[in-house]
Image (cartoon, rainbow, N blue to C red; front, side, top):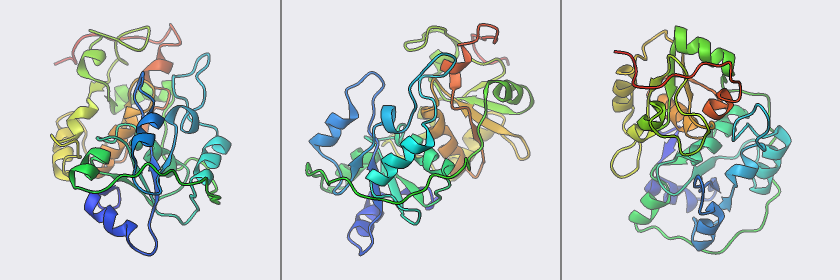
Length: 280
């Protein structure tokens, strides 16, 4: 787990060392307020803000989800502005549970950068440990990171549908959205037929930190995940599904991400929609 998460105390020690990691502030809220405003009110020293909607996603369009994967050149430019080199150690964080920072973690892994960790508990855990924030914004850097070909497994609509039948496809949204009882964001409610409800909130403990690897493994096994069974995850637009993939990685379970997720799935009216609870 140490290769994926870092505690506030461990990160503070690294920042005081001679070669601190590059820090990316990925605070973001669906519908606002803007993460940049939160960043300017206080952030970890030398952290640079990364805009999820601009740097970590391409613009939505016809037949695409709300947060398509960014163009490689756009993502690479953002990383270089933040001072990321091919050999940099990177730590990403957000306000708390990692629901948006996990998107940056996944994209860096997808770009072939393995030395990336998430601050467990985010800014909330950092300040709870009596560690300081600053309002001083560092200037843009001149990193040399080269974004390579995709290194993490991905699904499209066709392969996601097939995985829901032949493996385990996890829906990372809240249970009421999975069941189609409410849909506050997308125009159609429901889920991909055969998918299993796996709200990302269940991956976290009461303080907003991830459950242990063993606890996460038990949780996913209760959803049908088992050795030799292919696993994938989706959500509304591919953001919190990255959190699910990270939690699965903590449990020692490799998983694919469906970046388009529900917001892409429903752009084709021929794709089936299921509602209600999972079949017994």
